[in-house]
Image (tube, rainbow, N blue to C red; front, top):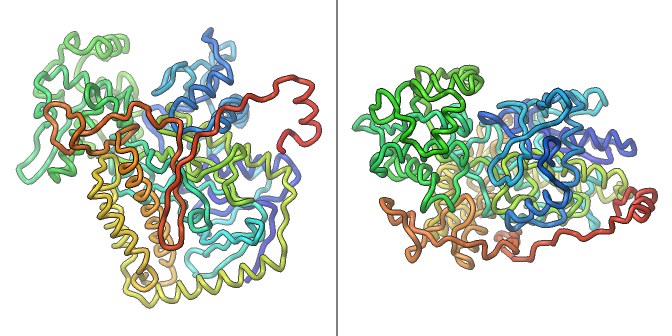
Length: 632
């Protein structure tokens, strides 16, 4: 087996992965390469919204802002560590301006101010955007920089095991997709930039090819945290895209289709059509499903879509070609004052939804046209989808995991809590990858060649045996994957009922127990499917363990989910499934962690790390910086 040696291997070619490699190379002391399943895949490159947001420190206007203020805002989102929040605030300007220098076209005024707007959970106007494809532009700019720096990219390699010795990481074993060969890297540092565990859900707005590799870290012994905390929202299913912002603000029709034909269903719940339209408008501002907006707010729209799609087994669509409820003309003055003021200011208080959308945001229409769907004449199928994992792999203030030499950056790192400002994930990916690169550049870790050789030979034997069995078993990996993802969307997503989650957890653990004897693929070219399924089931088991523990120990609803509780509160007109007990921020100061323990998973709770009260006296900071860049 050919073993290649580097000081660091980055896994993933999204915005966080490229930035980690670029920064390591720029700091000049370490060799680095990138491993990826497919360069052009991933969430950063293939996702967005009507106006994809980047969240950073205020850099324009007269609204006062500070690093500590931003850190406190991030920290207050609940179950967030103060040191990572402070890093994300302190390095947000540096990371944002780095992207600007690389050519990402964030808008500025004629004087050079990067003016902003308010996004969700944002007390300041810190948000900015380069358009619907902000993260794609970031990825392309960083990819270009990586090429300029001659950073080697190994494409079509699936990372299958993190190799360790007694001191931590010593290498990475990869499967060459399509051939079944194994490739090994000797490296004292591995940076996972593999995105969120998107593959565990069927109803998902993540790009089709993005499944994540969080199970890779779990099997290596890494701890996960806040895996109960996801962001769910309404999204189109083909193509996968958030229907946030102006897609809602133009007041489309909500239509469900079943064997008895199609019908608008919002008036099954709302008695006043203009109350319904006002709630739809607010979904643009308040796109993520938010349990605090169920009893008296716009998130009831998400539940009505869930009811039609999951409980009634109907397909749900947005229709931009007609006004809702048979209205030939909308009386905009009857809308909620916020909706009326916005639409009149935008000069969109006329016509039908598609005309209003073309008035306010033509790129939002063009985006679907570029994906083969003309929403000016065709329905857009939607569902309540998983969009972002606020939890992930537990990391410290350098984005290093509990395994020495293993780092997690981007969405696979669990630095967000219960809520987060819209766009903060893009900032966290850039800051986390910078922090990991800074640490690696000063690290003294090396690989013991003998230990690496032994670990590599043992790993190759295990994986060769695994592949041999998979090739002999019935070809069922893809079918099992599809079924497991659908079951997770039904029982372990936004709507959480304890008994259903317990039944599903038993199913998943049984599949994992029998995995090597039961799961098979058709040929060498599809071996990766077996690995993808194993990773997905591993993360499903971890997430379900976390969900069940939270339901049994806390039992209250918070964030972008609803935990069923027959003693809780219910909005009039909804089924008992949607009765819940609001949390009231009671456990915002604690973080739930989950780890693999043999064939099972176990949870533990810890207090959040507070925001550091560090030394700001310049001479002392300068001395530490001269000595070791203030890394250790």
